[in-house]
Length: 468
Image (cartoon, rainbow, N blue to C red):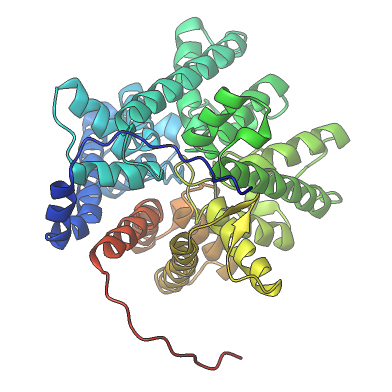
């Protein structure tokens, strides 16, 4: 007896006439990526304006527009690349503006906008639900409002818990008010995988690089933020019952753990005999540093060491992991672990002579395989064009440093070799574009492909060509 796989049917709040009206108006669908881009641009320029105010910075105002624009883009896209010292250059008000932009950027435009619309009693239309579905990377249209509230609640709860843990530790270093602000800001920044740090008189997270509690708190927040809300919900609902997870959660967790383990080994072994990166630290500290870098380097941009001092092979491996990034629908960037996992699965299935791509006993829809291929080549193209542009704008820097910064910007990671503050204005504008495209590009591609699949039903005759 063959048992049919049980399918969950979500309630729909629209009728057939709504779908047909969208099919007859493809321009509305194809304009959705532009709508998201416009809203992000509005948020970026609003943040830029606030950061340009005298109350936001300590500087004399020279070059403030480019610095403010770069910082706003980096915050909204949750990248973490900076051209000025966040702790010294920006006032508390400026840091609050940056923190709010990080929070909204991490929560996601779709989730935040939906939450605001519902607060004001606005109706969620079908077209908006399509944007929500793609923005949240889910395959359903029903229940999106409840999912949005759940995401908002989970994200807020995690950041509050992170703030409490960090606050307890920071009380030993700062006064209560300063400890509260440091804990809140860094909890938001760590969960968002943003990489912004406001510790005084420090170079990034190195201020607490030997504090296990702080490092563990940061690593946990980074990991949770990088696996996506949907996976976190599965973990909360089913705990350690792996077989009950959705296919998406299984792929994300498996791929993330494999990449983290490989990254740990490559970093530890690559820098084992190096005194530049690890300085004079002992074996235990080196293991802790390598563990943290394996989690942070792929998505967050926090660093316990100077990335400009690591060996060339460690730098190259780090670039690969930055390009991959975190999970789809997470706060992380890159082409996503889902994308690379689907591509690898497609290659394995092709080598085994299978016509369909499957994992964990489930078949993966062919349109998702196609989307993964498109996103991969889109990412490679953007990085290629970006690094070529940087070679023209800043030819005085080594190519491997420029490539590192380009991949970090596209993957919205924020790791840096330290050359960003010294880049030309044109070079900074290149990174601004790459951060923006890196954050919105995959979403725009997904929306466009989904919409074209809905609109187009034309089928061409089949004919074979010669490959290899």
